[in-house]
Length: 265
Image (cartoon, rainbow, N blue to C red; front, side):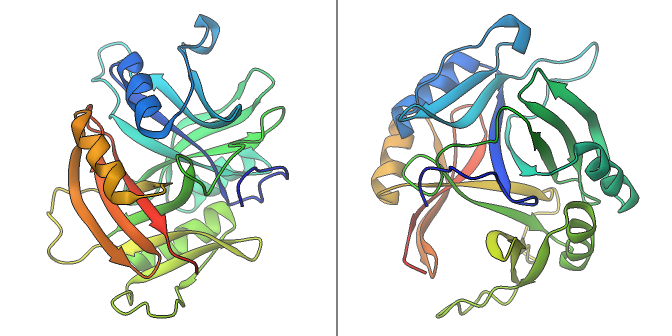
């Protein structure tokens, strides 16, 4: 799948955005890395930048500004899940043990959104589409291809997300997937749309549960080279998995994400 022409099924990752201290520097970095086109938006939208590939929206980048006496927001990518009713989903998140960090609110006529955290603190968003359904391109170079929850408590995640988002979670069944016993697929509308990775005992205690954004690239190794030359950091050098050749990296301002050249599945 490349261009998205149908509405996103509820429970599917439908949008991603980046909160970062230097918005223009991030726009320049991701333009050079992925070929995105975007510019700082109008004041009435807080300067939110809509980034595009081939004229289709693929991601947002916003300035991370502290509110009142609070510390600045984390520099991080956020995954948004499609929902048919943001208010009902926000209630389900709370009832299932999660926390609504920013309650549902309208974004002009584009849609209705909220930001939440699961019981282990992993932050995610929900998006009820109106005029804007979400990313217009996926699963190709420079676009979202996968969203993955890293957690220490698979049982709690497997209880929370189906109740909160209406998705199904089951062990991944992939040919040649040795060493993936602690990996689960997230299914929405009968399709696998993301995964859950269980963190092992060697994971540092300070490493929080989090959602990791994967971008498809034509060549993981060459993209890593380009990233490091532009000031990014490599957290996990390129390695091969049944799904493809993967590297976990960090942009110059500290936002982590993954690159993958996918193998046919």
